[in-house]
Length: 469
Image 1 (cartoon, rainbow, N blue to C red):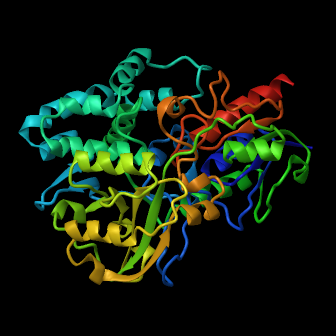
Image 2 (cartoon, rainbow, N blue to C red; image 1 turned 180 degrees about the horizontal axis):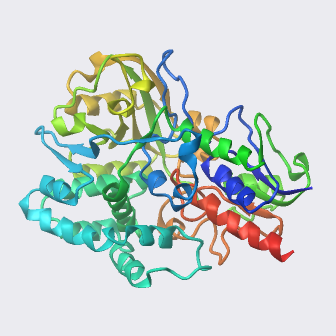
Image 3 (spheres, rainbow, N blue to C red; image 1 turned 30 degrees about the horizontal axis):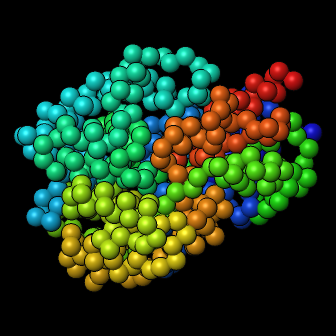
């Protein structure tokens, strides 16, 4: 009998498996697809030689993850590559605000009226970042915070809606950039703790940047898999699970899946029926015949570029995607250009690039023209650089990854209490009514992102249960 079986070979499932194997337990991972990766994969989606990330591409939470930083993943081929700027937010006049590694450079890009306000916002937390990130990504309610004063101060700033926090800024340059940071959560700006979402992304950039993985996001998954195998763990791909009886006997079953899939497989009935799924995205992967011709020079050297004229435009796009049954006419875009720092991703002189705009859950329309009109506003001549494109709306995203219900790449709405309390209101969010079944996906704390911390935390819960038995 195995000590633990993990269902799903995404970053959280692989991290959970590694953490258990490091404790000397026998572990096997079962993945429905023919390769590992989940939301951290790399594939040739357009033309031969162009290696795209179907989902996550830039990794501010990955490079800052306490779980990943405690593993020797660099020995297994993981290398973080940093663009000159982590992120840029261009404006229609050809200028841009930036999220730089330097707080001073970032503040200066907002202009003199908001530079001081931004420094006062981030500097109290930045010098305590490593402790702070451990505290708010740690196993909930089972370990005392290492720095409760800083964590409480962060909560006072971050728990209110981001719209409150943005009142600190007098001009829209700072508000627009910060609104774009919050939009990574794919939820309206006025929700509970959305200020914390934006602040975390800003602090992560100042602490260690927003890098890409050399060769693509698949490198993260491959490094975790290789490390797991060296620890004695096994990985089985192309193995779909429909019920627990499909798995070998084990003392614990750990699911890197959506909550409802877990309930269906483990026979938990309607245990997770109240779990909410959120809005989706329409994603385009491009093979380009050269760099994106951004008007703003700062955007040309940034790994990530946010495309939205102002904070009101961003708020309107998010409201439409989250509360209506139509896509925004002028979507806010999050774009990543890995080729700025990684020439291995495309043939010489060519580039890979992706962009997505927010759309309602399950939306089956085509946002291509709206996305490219937005890109042309900030990068005239963009369409002339396109060699090929691959599109994926909510149905395609859901078909590609079973965790993306309705195309929700966050594996559950990141809004309301569910931003903080997922997948249920519980003192032990990784356990289920079945004593041997656990959840470790992005539906559990600390939530979405390629960071492995949900798997890390779930592994601790599994370890405690096995040790007590």
